[in-house]
Image (cartoon, rainbow, N blue to C red; front, side, top):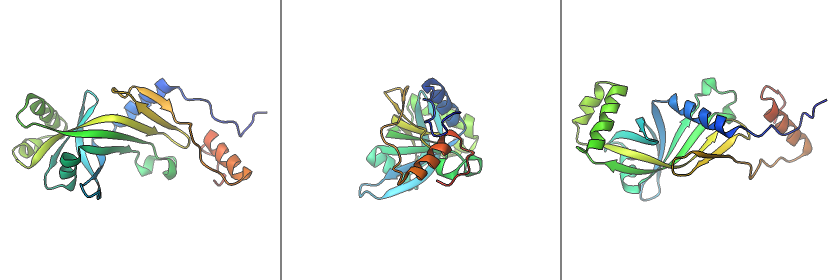
Length: 197
């Protein structure tokens, strides 16, 4: 007889990292959280291309996020699983990056190379946008990341290349009584478990 309240086995971190990369490949846009100099937050999104681990967005001065990116130099980026495909809405898979934001100078070789990638990925509209002077190419350089693939499945991704991954186990949920703890643990072991948590 097995103990139904046993903790799930430790994850294979190399497998988790491969899952992170596959998950991210499924997106053509990213969600951004920026903040203005007064501390007012803004949530938005932008189409992006990835190059050597950095994300690039081509954004207009007419958007609040562009000014925030250029002034603060900070952004949080989110990739999140669609609600319709999530096993549970409280545990949607998500990948969050903390990034530095820096403008790539127009006319530079780096800028032209990345904008050509935008055209290949997003089509002829980019050629038109390239002619508009209020558009800026901004590099979002990840400094750290966090991947959550379900309940008690959170991973921190660190180091310069974001190649060091670790399972976050430092703090768990606080359950009020033994029955709640048991029900929650059963749910972790078997997500199809229909017990109330």
